[in-house]
Amino acid sequence: MHHTLGIATHGPGLVEITNEVADWLAQHSVQHGLLTLFCRHTSASLLIQENADPSVLRDLQRFFERIAPHAKGLWEHDAEGPDDMPAHVRAALTQTSLSIPIISGRMALGTWQGVYVFEHRDRPHRREIVLMLTRA
Image 1 (tube, rainbow, N blue to C red):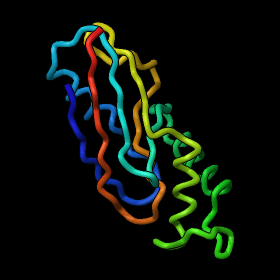
Image 2: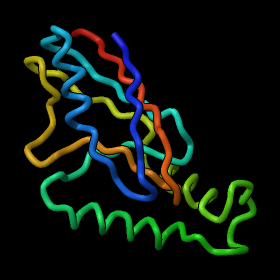
Image 3: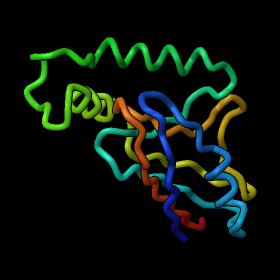
Image 4: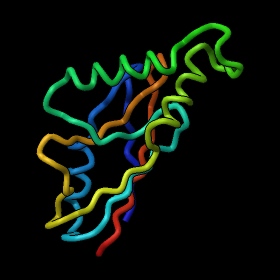
């Protein structure tokens, strides 16, 4: 079973998609299996991260701004603007694919874990996340 989620982002930052993924999963009667999520972009990524304290997300955003800054002359590739290559670096350092075990019909996430799309570009985008569910 598969599905593509369309996720609207609003510029740089993390957008939690845990509920959207859980809602899709609930429509299927798979008790045990593996859910794979795949981000179809090179300037956005996927993370499993804490969803209890928003300061974690802000700190992650600031960290990536420091290690892959928008700096004129720093990057050769700037075809789509000064945020283009930093977005590719940030995506390369994170994940474009996640695998989450399904146990008793639910994602086996920890208590404080959520699933996020991490937008690395400066402007809003519509991101596609492919979900693939495999029965155990």
